[in-house]
Length: 116
Image 1 (cartoon, rainbow, N blue to C red):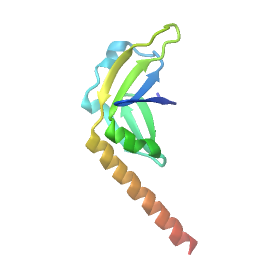
Image 2: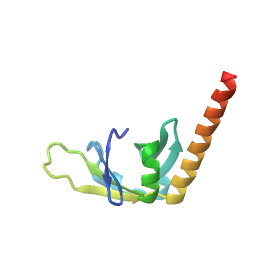
Image 3: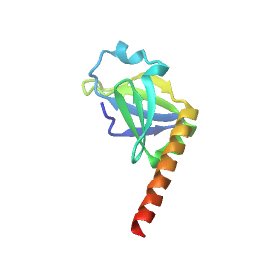
């Protein structure tokens, strides 16, 4: 499930996902359920089957404020309560950011070589 927007919070980001799963399933998140991958636009954070895009301009913010709070976006409910929150690895974000920057630099260098 691909997250289409998020809210900036004091300690990280807030995301909402449709209430497609039983709450208990999502609440049992462990470190092995979380991963970070590099994309052409920045990073993606994977929490179980939830995919959170992290564009380049948000990476530094998330590295300093690594909490992701998940709400179930149930339109039948007036007030949404947080389902769970996870603390991302700051080191993992910084490492992924380094890989992203390296790949961006390599692509620019390759483009320059191709123009010559």
